[in-house]
Length: 199
Image (cartoon, rainbow, N blue to C red; front, side, top):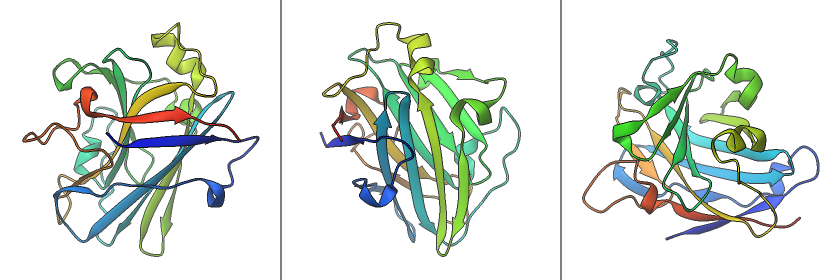
C-alpha cells in the first residue's frame, strides 16, 4: 500500500510546494500520463489532478452521464476505517460524477443543487493536456461521517485514477494498485494510505 502525506496550507495552495503522486499503475496503456497533488487546511482538502493527453474527449454534459467515458480524472476518498467512500470524477468541462458507496454495486449518485459551489472546480487546458482543481469541504464529509474529526496526523484512505473509456485510446491508470486480477476502481480495501500532515 502506498502512502501520501497531505501538506497543510494556510490560504490558497502554492502548488509548486505540494508533493506529487504519480498515477503510474497501468492497466490499459495509452500515450497518456497523469499525476496529482493534495493538501488541506481547516476547511477541507484541495485537489489538483493533471493529465498529459493529446486526444481529449469532453462530451458528457448530462447530470446522469458517464463521466468516465470522457477524458476523466478521479479521486476516491474513504475518510474512515469503514469501507464507505466518495468517488469524485471530473471531465475537462468540470462536469462531475459524485458518488457514495461501499463498492461498485451500491453506488448512490449524489447530485448537489450546485456542484460548482460545493466543490468549486476549475479546469484548464495545458500545453500537452488538461488539469482540474477543486476543494472538498470537511462539512460535506461530516454529513456522511458525523464523527470525522480531521487533524494533523489523521489517517484515511484514497486513490487517484485516470481513465477515458470512450476516448480514441481507452486507458486506465491508478496511483495505488487495485484488487489483483480485477480492473475495478471501486475497491476501497485497496486504496492507499493518506495522512494529514503539518505545514
